[in-house]
Figure 1 (cartoon, rainbow, N blue to C red):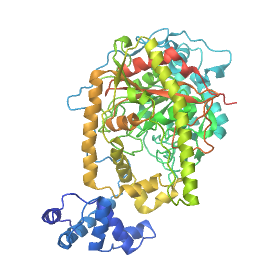
Figure 2 (cartoon, one colour; figure 1 turned 180 degrees about the vertical axis):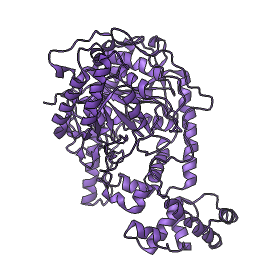
Figure 3 (tube, rainbow, N blue to C red; figure 1 turned 90 degrees about the vertical axis):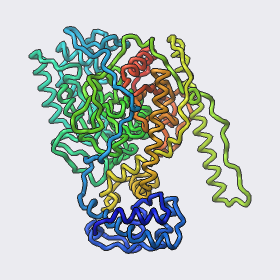
Figure 4 (tube, rainbow, N blue to C red; figure 1 turned 90 degrees about the horizontal axis):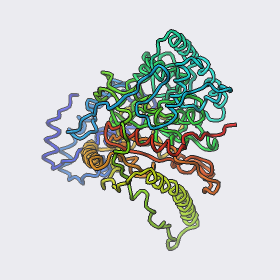
Amino acid sequence: MTLDRRGFLTACSRAGITSALLPGVLYTLAAQAQGAASTADSAEKKTLAKITPEMLDQAGALAGVGPFSAEQKKMMLDGLNDQRDSYAPIRALKIPNSVAPAFVFHPGPAAALIPKAECEILPTNSQIILIDCVGGDCLKEPEAPDRFEELAFASIAPLAGLLKRKKITSTSLTKMYLERLKRYESKLHFVITLTEERALAQAKKADEEIAAGKYRGPLHGIPWGAKDLLAVKGYPTTWGAGGFEHQSFDEDATVVQRLDEAGAVLVAKFSLGALAMGDKWFGGRTRNPWNPAQGSSGSSAGSASAVAAGCVAFAIGSETLGSISSPSTRCGCTGLRPTFGMVPRTGAMALSWTMDKLGPISRSVEDCALVLNAIHGPDGKDTAAAQTDSVPLFLNDWKTLRIGYLKSEFDAPEPLKLAEAKPNETAEETQKREHSNEAAKAARARRDYDRRYELAALDKLRGMGVKLIPVELPKLPYDAMVPLLTAEGAAAFDDLTMSGRDKLLTEQGVEDWPNLFRVARLYPAVEYIQANRARTLAVQQVSALFERVDVIVTPTTGTQLVATNLTGHPALILPNGLRGDDAPRPPKIDDGDSDDIGGPGTPVSLTFLAGHFQEAKLMAFASAYQEATGFHKVHPNLD
């Protein structure tokens, strides 16, 4: 039956209905009335029960509109039944995950301009350098170590210098990393697929080209790993999820193609939490190299764990709402979440078309710059990828930058309020309240301890001559905009929910994708649009901060993580020291909800933010802090 859109809208208008009900509300209620289908085929073929006035009352309550009068409901019924019939032909298309909606998110305010490069990476005859590079590693004359495995934790620039000057070979470097991946996989569970045959062939080709004087640049011959949501031809791309273990694609992701062109050597596809949530995948849980009893956090779980463990020179991760930030924090890596649109996502699993971002996880800011230089820019396929001439990597003088800090995030928190006993409280309620209070006190103790490192960072910056300018995030309901993500994710994985294959996913809790996707189907379309309008305000108001300052320093946790993922601003996450022996002990069970539970001997982090496409300023300043502290040079003892 063809939908009479005009008739439906007219009926709603006459009835005084101005807020659309989510179609999935009525679809779900009607499906329940008809009875659940046992298979995907029967779900397509069955005839749903007609929508009844009683269903409208229930749907209205779910959507937050109504109540409707009997006359209003009568007027709405035919249009709603017709509208529901329009879902089936769209669902019958079986639209693949790679097809984006017919809208594109561009995070910058209307007048924003993408800056041109102010400097760039250049190879020289003797070594690889970054123009006006702040750090020391890239300027040192590298020498091959007596014990080859000492290179496991080297950053990219020294490795590139050794390779270019033929002091080591890509083949030997690749074999060393492959051996370490195999050695530590049973402890850390970070590999889904080794790409050994491909890697050795790439390494051999790199050695031949370098020997012939055909040097491609600083990533030539450097081994790396991909989060397994990036398509690699000839290998599975599992998305970390049960039911997708044998999925494969016929074309490499754009990022993979660009790193191939740069001469980098892909050695492995790394684990991610199922469909990019957390660190649990169909093969187990990826572990934190600093404390293997804990998870590595996620969802770029394997990428961060492998880099931290010295099992690859760098990795590519992705972030929608913390998936580079969280594992970089837990594992003590340097992670770059570029401006939304800086890196094309063609060939990457889609979770949220308006929030997904790809970026490097590495040992240093300079490593992130080298990788970003290779992977940025439009590819003609990802419509959200921004038009950029080249990436501005490091400014000539970071000391000219205006540096802000989110003052309230560094201030002492409000006194902890514990739940009080209620009159006639049952024994079960008492136990639950006491458990909740103990958890709250433990979390506050961890937060108070980690705050020491954040305050020390401010002192260090002041000691570097930085004049810190206090700023605050605009007061907006950022958390209320997060359903945008789950709504887009539910659309991206519509078939998974509708076919019942979501039962194959490992995690089935309240906060896991199967339940979140089902809940998202009851999100009204009007509210989705309203949340996007609120997001426009967030983009405008957060962007205004960067008219006052060039870079903002902030704790990694807190409101900024949600806010800047929604607004598309870039972030650099840096290791900021190791907790001492006096640190609060971690909880016995890591539920994956918090990144600050590591306990003694585990890393803490600090985050730097900048304006859209201002990675030059961001990396110049963050690199200066990183070299002044040296925290990125400390590594876990895996043996």
